[in-house]
Image (cartoon, rainbow, N blue to C red; front, side):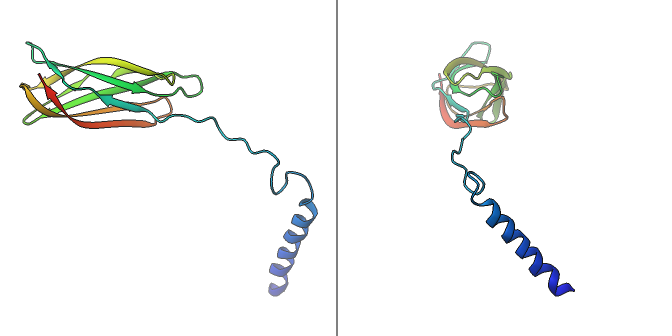
Length: 141
């Protein structure tokens, strides 16, 4: 009996495919639709960063992100490392509408920044949870 079940199952599947195959769209649909293209989030850190008398930095960023199911709010944050000091911006809301936006970000230090070079890291999250990153050396003036 064991030897009969597998061959009969295969024969049944082959018969079903042969019967349904002539139906339009069964094995190969006439039209295939793709989801609309969604741009992954992009973020770019500008240089130089400007050092203020209170120790904070102002950095320009440029970003682009796309909406998801009508939701147009994302978020971004910037970190600057200049050993032994580092600083973070507050989490900022991003407008995700597929267009490029510019923003000025204030980075609050844990210590004291000084003129020179530093590493900057930015992260952008769109409404779908996709992430855009930028890591670069910047100049502090």
